[in-house]
Image (cartoon, rainbow, N blue to C red; front, side, top):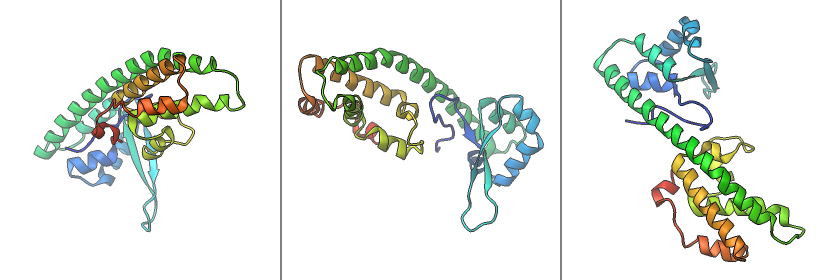
Length: 219
């Protein structure tokens, strides 16, 4: 089954959408949104009722696509007829919410470990001889770590995942991606400390593959 539950950014709680529920339950989207609006206060009892406005090209008014957390999605399931299709969907939705909670725990753990590694890398850069372009080395080496680990820059990752250009790229990464970038950042700090320059470090990192190719292409 397709992805039903999302974690984007990874600083928020996992969610599904009214559009996903409508499609997988085999019902009209406006039926789902009407149920949500009829019982709005009940949904708000389990958290902020979030939504995004989607423009429908050439088709009248834009539509609301609700973002529902696990409790809100569970509540909505109680309002749907228990058909065979809906039952299968419910089981998969439960499975994916559980898996995403596990992913969120992993993300938090990796981020906590990465803080010390980031500090080591920035300290190594700070210790380099002063130069007119030294302040750019922080972003330069960070971008190098992203490219080496994921095959793309932080800017490209933000674009692919619909994040604002000023967003923190790591907030849109999986735990595996974060761990891969962190590993590369650790290598960067070590190689700086042994006296390698940017060109030498880039060449060294090009020979290391942290994520498999399929992981590099994940979005």
